[in-house]
Every structure is written in C-alpha cells, then in structure tokens.
Length: 355
Image (cartoon, rainbow, N blue to C red; front, side, top):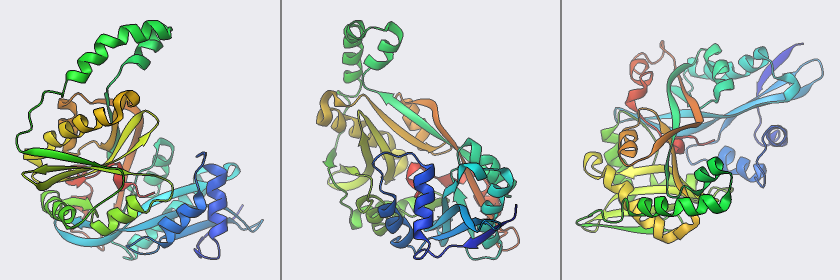
C-alpha cells in the first residue's frame, strides 16, 4: 500500500478529522466538534496545523495529527512553538510505518524552521513512534494523589462495605485533622466557581518566567482560553493572598469524588509553594464536605512542586504515567538543544497538555 501525508484544510476537511477522533476516542458526552472549533480555530496564539495521512490506493483518509501553537519562554525569551496532540489512526491502519510517516510531518516543519521546537505527551504505545521519528524523550509525566478518605481502599481489602465504613471512620478523622490546625499568618484564600484572572495573575506569571528556564504560556489571555472558554470541561480556581497581595493560584476541576489539580501560578516559590497547597486543602475540604475522597495532580517528574507534594503526603500513582517528548533542529537552533533536552529545565504540569 502507498500512503501520502498532506496538510489538512481546517475548514474543508474538518469533518474528516472530527470523524477520525470520534471513531478512535471513547469519551462519553464529549463534543469533538466544539472542541475542534476551540482548539484548532480559536487558539489565541494562532490556528492549529494538521496533517492527514491518506491510503492512496483507496483514496481515503486513515489518520491525522495536529499541532497547537503556544507561546513558550526559554531563559526569558519568547518563542511560538507547537504542542502536539490528536494523533489518531483508524484501527486497521495502525502499523508502525503509517504512524512514523505521519509523525515525521511535524518534525519536518521544525527542520524547516517554521517553529523553533515542539513538545508532546505520548502514552507508552505512542512513545515508540515519537522516538522512531527522531524526537527526544526528556522526562515522564507522573500522577500524585492525596487521600482524604480511605473507605474505597479498605473495601477493596475487606470486601464488605459496612465493615469498610466502620474501619475507615477513625482513619478518616485523623486525615481530616492533618492540615486543620496549620497556621497561616497573614495568609487568606478564596475559591471561585469560575475562572477569574486579571493583571495580578499576569504578575505571578512574570515571576515564573524569570524563575524557570523553560515554561509554557500562562498569560491571562491564554488562561481565559484554556480554562474559561473550554467547551467540554468546567474549571475552578483558588487564589491565595498574603497581606491582600495575590501570591498563588490553583486551577482545578472536579470529576466525581476527586479534585484534579490542573495548573499553578505562584509568586516566590520557596516561600509560598507549600503554603499554597495547605491553604487549598483547608478550603477545599469544608467546601465539598464528604463528597471528595482525594486530590490528584499530574506533573512532570522534575517539577519543583513534586517534593512539596511528597512532603504534604501525596503519593505517586502509576496509573497515569506518560512520556514528555521534545524536538528542535540542532542546525537551526543549536542554542536551544542543550536547554530543551534537559527535562530539569522545564516547569511543566498537566495544564501544558493543550490537547
């Protein structure tokens, strides 16, 4: 069979890409059409790019992939880069050759200096495709969780709901006391049911751009698009203040009985990182009472928040691990290669997965 990769017309071939996603992604209640409009056409950094791979013998589309423009900052300098996503191939065409051919399309654009670099978060199966395409693995994304209640864990062991509930009571009570009596001199917080960001949040991002060598856009415009305008997810935020000055923000979403932390803004990391999570926990627990059993946060393994989470009792869970992939042209941007290919230089959370 012969296959060809062609740049997609986002308007005329939209239906092709949406259909491929619907055929290969099992997300109940998810509106892929609205998502396409949001992420491909209304991205504040610019329209996305997509490539469709065609079976030339049958003249039918068999897969596609997309890249989403995003501002990123390397040592304080602004670049417009690509965040890769939506790599989808119809089941009967899922061979290594087809996948690698499609994946190389974005790499070729980087080699032509259309963008200085790209990054992606492939799962274990797709990681092989990225590496075969010449991309570099720089880190792992890992999930950390903090339990508030142990009913579910005990029930798995005891196989009896009543016994589990009785045994869990004293443990749940101890867990509820863990952060209740923490002192927060001069600190206060506020929960928002909707995203509300302004110039104070922009100030936090300015600090982060100076603190971390490689960081993706977290501007007010980007946050409003990413979280407030998202057509399929509802996000909330928690703001922490020190003497009335905003010093930290947590963006999060709730799914069933778990709070998923998505991203963070912080000022003076060394001073406020631990306090931000402690305050967040103290505000979340009474707000949701017994309806929340745990907090969850996926972030890059070298993120400086990882030791903070571990100190607070978060534990690594191996059910959401994926690779972090990056590619830049050594010929076009030799100055970027040593910085980008060291995962320790990046500040990255699950919020960096625009896809």
